[in-house]
Length: 313
Image 1 (tube, rainbow, N blue to C red):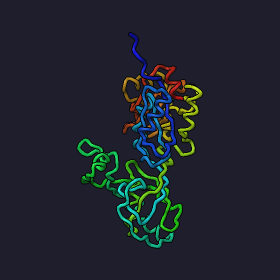
Image 2 (spheres, rainbow, N blue to C red; image 1 turned 180 degrees about the vertical axis):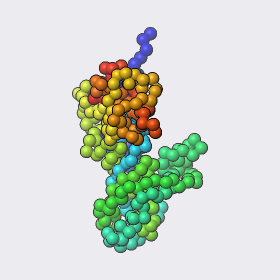
Image 3 (cartoon, helix red, strand yellow; image 1 turned 60 degrees about the vertical axis):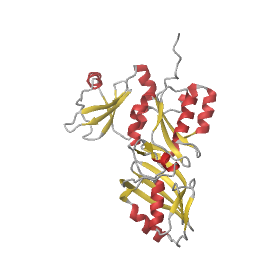
């Protein structure tokens, strides 16, 4: 009896514009079904109430998804002063309402300045972090609360975009693991009245930007035209590393690298990660510069040459 196929071999990255009302996993499953893809994963959860960039990795690109999980993110958030909710956003029940102080831009900037640079955050109960094997949000839905230790995060930029009565809008550039809901709550606490997020949009994830995000409606429309039209929406796996320097390896050097051996490449960078290509211009993986200047393999493709070309795009 022939073994039933589990889907197409699809390789690449789709910078999805996640719609409001869907969890990241729900969006992933919908898109994976539309592509009829064998293997896919997302690269960092967005709240159900949030929208914006959610890069989805297919096939061999899933090997590189950790690079996006570790990457910086950018957000645009609209927040309301004077109201605290159970979840830190508009989806949660109101816990407390207090009069919001009259804030002018100078006063608001003074508050925001406390949260620029290296800060500590206590992760919210409504998050995907685990406590003794259970997600915190699962415990929160049971009415339970457990102690969470503060964690260091970096706020590289925190810009005030708008301030109107008891609402303000901010643009945030931050390190991985930053919770914007917690940031809004902490800003509200510093202002003396509490706050929560009204709307949240991720505008950048690693090298991907809002301008290239593909709406789910566009993915559905492409699916009606067939798999070839869908595949045109995909970016090559090397797009995950497009901010890293590129190195072209001679075939003999690439051979040793594929065996797991560090190699010496002339005129290579002195530190950090690099994108690796063969002489035909095909992306073959990610490397890292060692202290002695050699390039060590970190993530490599395991595809036939024709597949590598398709995955590179």
